[in-house]
Image 1 (cartoon, rainbow, N blue to C red):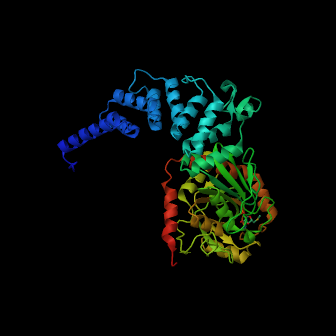
Image 2 (cartoon, rainbow, N blue to C red; image 1 turned 135 degrees about the vertical axis):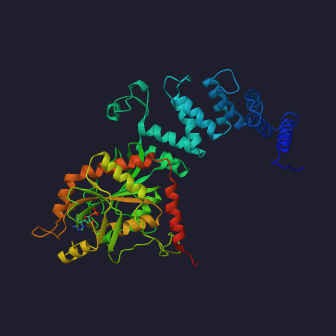
Image 3 (cartoon, helix red, strand yellow; image 1 turned 90 degrees about the vertical axis):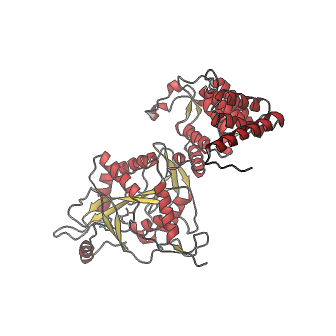
Amino acid sequence: MSYDLKREEEVKEYTENLGIEYRFGCFKEKKPEVCHLLADYLEAIKKDYKKAAKVYKSNCDDYNYPKSCLKYGNYALMGRGRDSIDQNEALKYFEKGCELNEPVSCLHAGVLLTATGPATKVQRDVPKGYNYLKKSCDQNDDKACHYLAGMYLAGVPKNPKDYNPHNPEKNVNIDFLIKPDMKQAFQFAKKGCELGNIYACANIGIIGGSGLDDPNLFENPVERDVNTPYGKPSDVLLEGFIKGVPCVLLARHGRKHQYQPSDINYRANIWALKQVGCTHILATTATGSLIHQYQPGDLVVLDDFIDRTWGRACTFFDRTEGGPRGVCHLPMRPAFCEKARQALLAAAREHGHICHETGTAVTIQGPRFSSRAESLMHRSWGGHVVNMTTVPEVVLAKEAGLSYAAVALVTDYDCWRENEQSVSVSEVLQMFARNIKKAIDVIVGAVQILAAEEDYTYLDIHKELVASAVMLKE
Ligand SMILES: CSC[C@H]1O[C@H](OP(=O)(O)O)[C@H](O)[C@@H]1O
Ligand SMILES: Nc1ncnc2[nH]cnc12
C-alpha cells in the first residue's frame, strides 16, 4: 500500500502502522534489530521515553543488541525515561555495548572511566578506560582517537590534584599513569584527522625560511624522514604540537641551510607536508623592501607575487609517477589563502608588531641579489618586497589544494636607495635574528586562530578550484 505523506491523516495512519509492524517484529518475531527500531520509534515519534528506555534496556539485557546497550547507557547518563541520572548504570551498559564491539559505547565507557572532576561519580580506572578508548579508536571512532591524543599530549596524572594545567613545566616531577608522549599523541591525532575529525586535524605545516631554519617550536618533536613521488624534501619533517595543535615543521633550505633557493625541491616540500596530513601551510620569508614605508624589522603578510624565477619545477601535473594526471591551469588571483592571511595578520596585531596587510613579493631567481637597475625595475612594477622563494612555493601549495600564507620579515632595503649600502647576507641574517621573536609570535598565534576556526568550508573551495582547473585528456 502507498501513502500520500502530504496528507495529515495518511501520515498518521502510516506511523500507526509502522508502530504495529515494529511491535509485531519485536514481541512476536523476537527480532532484536526490530526491537531497536521500535524503541527508536517510541523515542522519536511517540516521544514516550519511559517506554523507549524499557525496550532499549531489555533489548540489551535479553538480546545483547549492542546499539540498544549504547542507547540505554545514554538514557542512564542523561536521566532520560528514568527517575534519575546514574553514571554507574550508564557505564555498565556502555561496557556491555563495547564488549559487543559497538565503538561509541567503548568511547563513552573510556571517557567515564578516565574523566575527573566534581561531577564524576564513577570510580576512576585509567588503564581500563584507556583500553576501551583504544578499542574504539581501533574501530575507527574519530572522537576516541582525538581523546587519546589529548591524553598523551598532556599526560594522565595519577593524582589529578597534582596537575597544573596552566603551567606544564610544573608537572615534570609528578606521577603519571600515562606519561606525556608526543609521538603517540601525534599518531592518534593524525588518525582522528584522517577519520574526518577536524578538531584532531588542524595539521598545520610550517615552512621556516632563512633565519628560521631550525627553530625550537616544539617540545619533544618527532623526526620523520619522508619520500615523495617528486623526491626528498629539504630535510626531515619535525612533528609536534603548538599549544595542543598538531603541526609539522620543515626547514625550507634544510636545517643547515644547505639548499640555495633554486635548488630547493619545492614540489617535494609541499607534497611531503600534504602527505602527512597538513591542511594548511604557514611560511616565513626574509625579504628586502622595495618601498620606503616597509622598513627593516616590519612584517608583511604577502598577498601577491611577481615571478622572476626560471627553470624551477612549478607544477605537480607533469605525469610524474604517483602524481596527479592532466594539465592544470590554476588561476593565481588570489595567490594566497585569505583565511590564513587574516590569521597571520590578527596574530601580528595581537602582539602589537608592525605588520603590513598586503604586499607583492618579487621573487628573483637568486642566488645573487638584484642589480640596482633590477631593483629599480621591481619597484616600478609595483613590487613591495623582494625574495627568492615565494615562487613556486605558493603556486604548488595552491595546486595541492592547501591553505597557504606567508609572513615576510623585512630585513633590508635591497639596493635601490641612494647613498646606502646594498643588501648582504650578514645584514639579512642579523636583522632576522633580531626579529625572530616576531616571526615566531605570528606563526604560533596564527596556528591557534586557524585551529579554533569552526568552519572549514574554505578548504573545500581550495580543492574545488584545483579540480576545476584541470584539463584531462586521458
Ligand atoms: C639569506 S639571504 C637570501 C635568502 O633569504 C630569503 O630566504 P627565505 O625566503 O627562505 O626566507 C630569500 O628568499 C633568499 O632565499
Ligand atoms: N634584498 C633581497 N633580495 C632577495 N632576497 C632577499 N631576502 C632578504 N633580502 C633580500
